[in-house]
Amino acid sequence: MGVVIYKCMNCGGPLAFKPESQNWTCDYCLSEFGEQEVRDFIHHEQTHAETSMTGEALQHKKEQDQEFQDKAMGYTCESCGAEIVTDDTTAATFCYYCHNPTIIQRRLEGDFRPEKVIPFQFNREQATAKFIKWCRRKPLLSKWFIADSQLEKLSGIYVPFWLFDCDIEGEISGEATRVRTYTRGDTRYTETKYFHVDRGGSAAFRDVPADGSRKLDDELMTILEPFDYKDLKDFTMAYLSGYLAEKYDMDQNDVYGRVSTIIRNHMSSLLQETIQGYNRVSIHHTHVKFHKVEATYVLLPVWMFTYHYKGKIYMFAMNGQTGKIAGRLPISWGRVGSWFGAVSAAVFTALIIGGQLLW
View 1: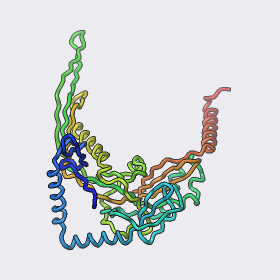
View 2: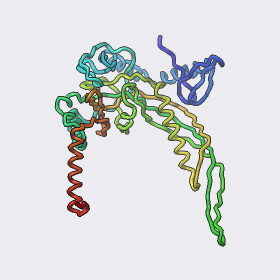
View 3: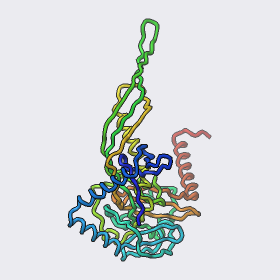
View 4: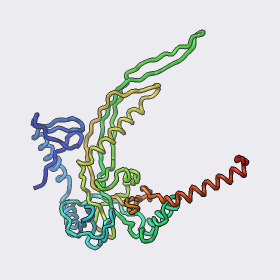
């Protein structure tokens, strides 16, 4: 039997049972509901989803789900616990996190089939060339970092993401001041006027992303954004052929807090931008209400490379659609000394030529 997760009817956030009131409350928008209200809402949503699909669409979905169950294979790393997903023709020979070569194959359990995917836009050779070009602009990087033996571990990974859509109503209120300075005779005056400001509005947010993996660095994934979601395709197992995928270990409820904070802050900023003509504005109250929150599970393409250097693991990632690069790279202290020596010598020579250094 599956676990029933109650969702807030106002903002889509997870509901928590409160023994003192015997009701369910949302920690994000502070709404409170009785059990029957929530069950009726869930029943309505499920019925609407089922009736909105034609018989042909339902059959197609069943076939896709069956294909995923038949062909999706799971691999578990005994060293770091990473769980990898790929098709039944792709061999996962090592873990792309820790490079442990002992990977245990098993039939994938549970329903982790994505709805959409952005396919890789360039192959491994092109990704390697982009990576080497990027590294050559880093003068303090160890030359062994781009050795062929290391670059063999460059892996194409489909990263699990949740894309959120929602409609927002927002209100802000606060205090604004307008300052005017003028002179009369020999006296200079400063006049300060105080105003109460209110702003309200609505907005639609689409495709707000949050990665669904605890092992991946959220900051690293954020730097790789944005992806162009116009390239999203309906998922089929064919896209996994030759690639790996991370199995999500955070569902939409786990990442909702992060996403709702981003949306709230952005909505507040949009409203504050409408307050013009004042010298100073202080916002004292913000209220944001969510409607029609929906999350779509998608896979996004990332070329990933991990590197062991002096007991530390460094992770490099490249957006498999746009080529944007991010990572924390190891510094070769030998090259640091050589580089700064060369820089110092060059500066020294320049100072002599320019007559700036006196003996």
